[in-house]
Image (tube, rainbow, N blue to C red):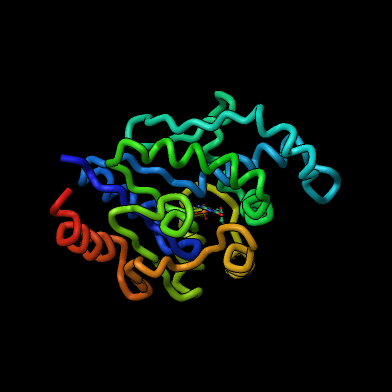
Amino acid sequence: MKKPVIAIDGYSSTGKSSISKVIAEKLGLIHLDTGALYRGITYFALENCFEIDHIDFEKLSQLLCKVHLEFIQKNDELLLFLNEIDVSKEIRTSKVSDFVSIVARQPEVRNFLLDTQRNIAEKGGVIMDGRDIGTVVLPNADLKFFLTASIEERTKRRFHELVSLGIDANETEVRQNLINRDKMDSEREIAPLKKSEDAILIDNSDLNKEQTIALMLEIINKNCKAH
Ligand code: DC
């Protein structure tokens, strides 16, 4: 019996990754947080291609061949390693959040990550979350979700997430960063954030994480019986 391929897209801080992680555990699927890959490349760019106040994208394109990103499971956590160094915490800083949408709209970066993402999904049994999974990366996914929530609710969630990671955060700045990223992610030319026509829309402004997971599992069970 082939396990399903599930695509989850949506706005920042709608809980895509933490929800996907739980669903993956419950259904025995591999979880891929594609936002972490874009954050990993952004961290690399800030470390290696940063000039005064901007990223030198020409230099980044040349250096992409030296980027090796790998997820490694350690106890309960999936850690991201960049060239064999654990950068799981570094990729969540506000500096990375401020630059990630600019990096993610570079065609070279998107192409570089496309194969990585598709190769992981090839054997099935995967739940992948991001912005263009249902539309570009896995258009033939067995089931697609699109998550949204109010900006107020999303700001609260991101703020608490950062605080719990021990990262200094300011609610006004967090809100502005979410607004800026949503705008850049939705308006970029290549693979913009957009609901795929066949994706199931879930607004979880009034649902907590457990309720969102229960709703999605119900939909998955109904729709993926044949797999
Ligand atoms: O899910 P996240 O907030 O960690 O994602 C960080 C950024 O990466 C997001 O602002 C846009 C970009 N991204 C993307 O362009 N395509 C994806 N599939 C995943 C993330």
